[in-house]
Length: 386
Image (cartoon, rainbow, N blue to C red; front, side, top):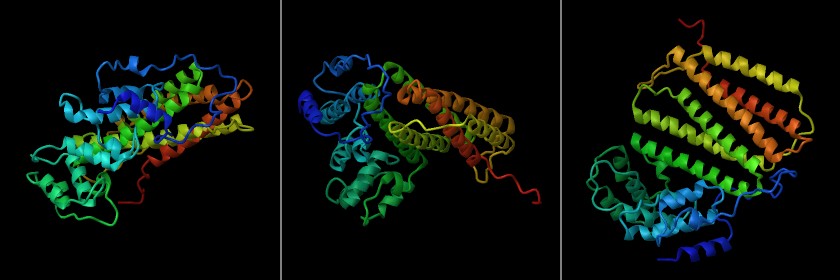
């Protein structure tokens, strides 16, 4: 088994292979004080007394902005090496290698990882791991094409829509992403939505690792508070828009999880753009007041227009519940807006530009919120309809 320390040092010496583009060196306000955080001792913090890392170590490292991303990747590789030798350890999530979150994309490693986890004959519905491995065998992703392996993987599985799809599928001109190209069961769709959400979360974690070493302790606190407020907002909005809440639980879970994942991807892009943000030359309070008025009108229209629902198991949301959910989402958004303004002024502002930045950020967020509310407001019914 590779030495974890040697792997870490080798990775630290190499270029960064994952995450967003590097943050500009001026991504912190000129007058911000240096961070007072102590250097990260990942051996001590993660209590790595054992001879191998675990997936919990990887997750803890990624959740801590001061644990180097290279250390998380080194531990992930160590956990993968040790996994076949100790059945008691939590398995490595192979999709990290397939999609390249928390590490580089490596289809050969993804296939090796899946082969170590998909053991024995299929019983019942095919797991998502088994479906991924079958697709990789069909297309030759991460290794040779192996139609016989595909057949062996699916033998004994319940003949659900995913298995029926794969049974007749052959290699195409373009390798297939199983989460996008296979007809999955609702449970499989939910698992893919969870993968999408985790991918977005890991990008956010990677951005924090880039930002925190350059932020003052106050800016670090603002970052944490703004992202917590965003998390509350995205979950409130997902709940508000979920017209499947009274239907099948998997449909509800897919809808809400996928929506949160999409908003997480959007959040990562917004945060990355913040590092190149510059204070505007001017910002008029009158424009902010006008945007606030537009938002009040958009919310009033949203409150009086119920969601449409044409197909079972979708259920129209009762009026009182709908209004309560809309109000909860808006309260969460207001808390996020205020926290985001504080983040921008703390990370990009100076005493002479803070007022301009606060005005500009609030204006941009409010205008965006107007568009989002309008997008979520169904068209009013035609008064001339019978």
